[in-house]
Amino acid sequence: MLGPHLWKVAEHLAPAPRAVARRDAQEHGGAIRHRAEGVRHRFHDRRAEYPAFDFLDTCRHVNFRFGKELVSLGRAITEGDTHEEAVAGMDRVVIGLILLGAAVQAFGQAYPARPIRLVVPFPPGGAVDFYARVVQQPLSEALGQQLVIDNKAGASGMVGAEIVAKSPPDGYTLLLGNIASLAINVGLYPKMPYDPLKDLTPIVRTVDVNYVLVVHPSVPANSVPELVAYARANPGKLSYGSAGSGSLPHLGTELFKARTGTDIVHVPYKGGGPMVTDLLGGNVQMVIGDQANLMPHVQSGKLRALAVATSKRSPNFPNLPTIAESGLPGYDSTAWQGLAGPAGLPPDVVKRLNEAFNAVMAMPAVREKLTGGGLEVVGGPPEQFARFIAAEITKWTKIAKDVGAKVD
Image (cartoon, rainbow, N blue to C red):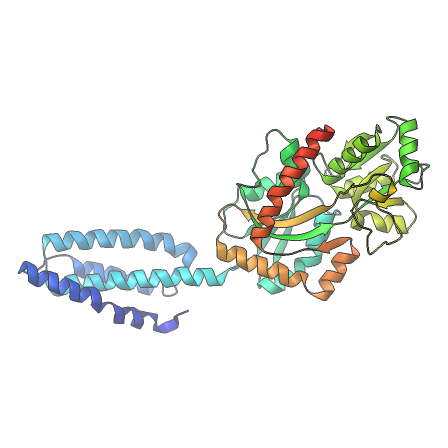
């Protein structure tokens, strides 16, 4: 910031155009008549009225006024007035332009200047909401502004994602998206209200979500092979829950069904919270979902865990085998989350947010809470996240087609 001496700096730079104007006047051999006195007074008023050049309310006005003043100055030069007054008018135009540039610079340094809305496109109780609650306070402190969580559930995350995609690209409305809202839905829904690659700005990949296969205690199975045998013997009797059509619990279980040749009925919900509630009540009998949502109920004896859905065993539950080692080699359903904003988000805003999220996730206390909830911190630069999203869209679109997954 140039501080209170900015006006003196600008006036110091103004004599350059003054010399040019004086030379041009001498070449034409006559006095120049114009209305520069009015120009000077109007710019003086501008300085008094907006001493701090508040960017959001002033910049549009200043741009318009500068355009008018430049036009007036040009007309005045052609119509003629005194040379000295013409030069003074040019001085003020130069000074004003310098001040506008400083205002733009100050705006970039000021972000964020007010609370930030973090749209969570799922209801409370799921893995995405869990992550948001863990990082909310430390991020508010790191950014110097309150991070306000806004749960906007529906359509497998597309309701909340559309809100962000259609918001102004100013950094004050952000999306905590996941594998469904940013990738899987593309291969399932023939017409989406937004394009993850064109209508959103990737900021940072936050975490991977470790999934686990659990069943209700009423299901007579203590392992994946036993579950497969029971499902084959009772086609259509079992049902599984998901966080919505297009969510990873949906695609991951459809992949499981295709690999095992079983008939298990899909029951979609509007998020992980309602899904777990019905699983605990026995309304659905099986779920492949996130550990943060499910393992507390396994530990309390209300659910039974059969295997983890990731390619490697979970460090939190090392005694649980993977689905891959339980008879389905190569099986892997790893979910992920990430932060995005509307398309056209300024690079300096993206950088500020990326650095803040990475720094907060590196804090030992935050990392411990996330790991305890079955979330594995990833982080990284925006460009890496953008490439990852594109690759995931290609991967899951193919899987959806191969297993014949449909929107229910």
